[in-house]
Image 1 (cartoon, rainbow, N blue to C red):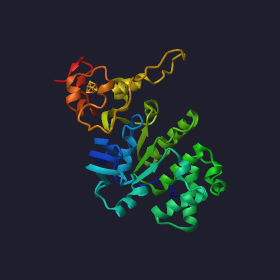
Image 2: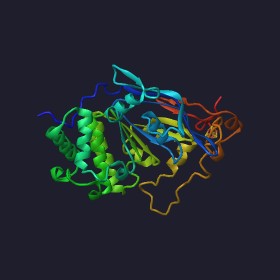
Image 3: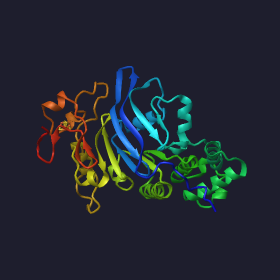
Image 4: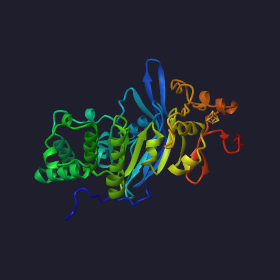
Amino acid sequence: MISHVTPQHAARSGEVILDVTGLKVSFDSPDGTVHAVNGVSFSLRAGESLGVVGESGSGKSVTMMALVALLPSPPASVDAGTAILTDGETELDLLSASRSQIRKVRGSKVGFVFQDPLSALNPTMRVGDQITESVRKHRGVSGEAAEQIAIELLGAVGIADPERRYRSFPHEFSGGMRQRVMIAIAMAGDPPIVIFDEPTTALDVTVQAQIVELVKTRLQQERGTAIVWITHDLAVVAGIADRVAVMYGGTIVESGPIDEIYENPQHPYTRGLLAAIPSADSDGTTRLASIEGSPPDLLVAPDFCPFQPRCSYAFDRCVDERPLLRGVAADHLVACHYDLDKGEPVQ
Ligand code: SF4
């Protein structure tokens, strides 16, 4: 029997399917221009999991929402950049695509799972019907066949007794179950990329771990879906990501394989984030490190290092010149004028 929950993605594992270069996004505000995203570049390979980490206002969600035109415009405007989405045969620049092209991309090429499933789901519609609607839209099947696929998807995301729960309304589900429904809706469209925007922030740690496991096994491993996992929590990323991009002040300040970033962080901000993670063998009496100071003022034009006011390594050049990403190891990039290993400015 052909499983309706197992997809066929055109791109081969490891091929770049999304290549973002020089993305800039700003917002008009009564106080002036908010420089939210300031030249972000990254790529995503088929079947991999990329964690995007940063504090509130770092630009991580704005970056991802800009890719599928989910930002209200105005006040948002995409000022520069390209974002090439490819399946190995055709290419589309998401940032210059028409509205109708973007509508087709959403759900079928790029899925989105938000932090708050209650506001993403229609409260007046049964959850099964919401999944069926997505199946009909993206798979071209209707009637009982679409409903059957929706029931299979509910079962695949771990909802017990899916035939009965198909007829439930969102308010009858717990937060974790609603997030499972959102994942089923994303699976219905069978996109090669799913972006998760802080999907487990509102959930307790046990349910959080279950959702991470579900995404890893059902989406990434079984279906070969590429995952982008946005979070403020570097510890959560360790459980899901193959690679991580650390964002600060609207820019990527460090990126690389997750083990490399954990073992050899090269940006002062990343080191600060790692020092703030509680250790598993902590006895609970050790005081965790925190990063002193406030996030950067995004109303100021971004022509210096955004971390400079909070950085204990800062020197003259950090105020005069914005650091660009430079390679420090295989697939490991950092944007900093200071070489932490050598203990001296980069020449
Ligand atoms: Fe600190 Fe300068 Fe590096 Fe910025 S560029 S993180 S201010 S040392």
